[in-house]
Length: 129
Image (tube, rainbow, N blue to C red; front, side, top):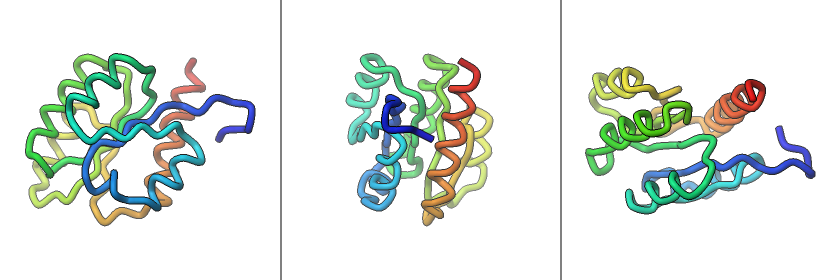
């Protein structure tokens, strides 16, 4: 996706499990400038201060992640969000798609597939611009 001379696109990781996944982060760093956000305040500030191209948002941890997704989609309607989570209620998955999530990956996810999907979404966006 990126050649050595191209600038990497910015990707936010938000959620405890995906932040702790060293393999995922190592793989994502090959293609993206990965910005870890451990708190909602950091996530909001990063969205305001940097040009973000994709968000990987884990849901099912604090319970307010669908509200966070709604806020991201409302304020940054062109910003794609991939949702990751240990979902017990399928209606939360449906709600995430209804709000505007691009895709959903259940934990445990297939890392290679998640990274490929992230790259494909960003590549599609860059082709539009």
